[in-house]
Length: 220
Figure 1: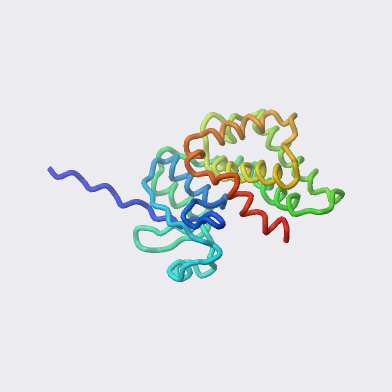
Figure 2: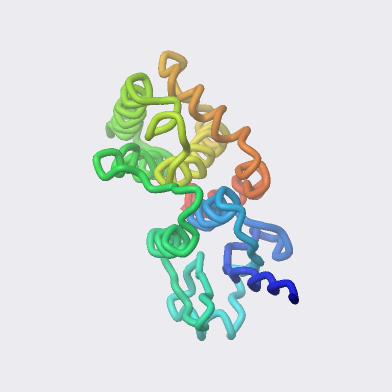
């Protein structure tokens, strides 16, 4: 009996690095999709999109020009990492990355708080404290439920948060000389656990490309 041909790799459009269009870039939402595919051991093919010079074929499938975009088997193109990761979960349910509903919003305010603090030029606007408060909430959750958001097994919430925490660590360290407070020991352990994971090592941007990606926004 003839062997069944393996399914073709999933096509996913992700951000290329600033100034290096042949290198994976610094989009945390693109990395989230790649992490999901890596954790599920799904064969995929990356199409790197130079955001400063988007090709016409990409604008035709993603009129707003946003990444990531998933190209499905039936040639549909799906933007938005929330929708893409849900599609991947439904199509490849093993291993399950479903986060229980009661934990789904854990850490969800960290990224907007980080961006506000990163762009802030006013030390008294409360943006630093707001970020610390959100990180402290995460620390308390991990203390009670860790090492991951849903306990022993990594889930979708971790894969969403991991790239954002990496951006936070690198960008705030570079532009503000800021670090996650030492007393948030569970957050520190969590970050180490995520950043040393094989899937993360394979899909992370370089520090240089991450900094280059944020520079125009910080200096705006």
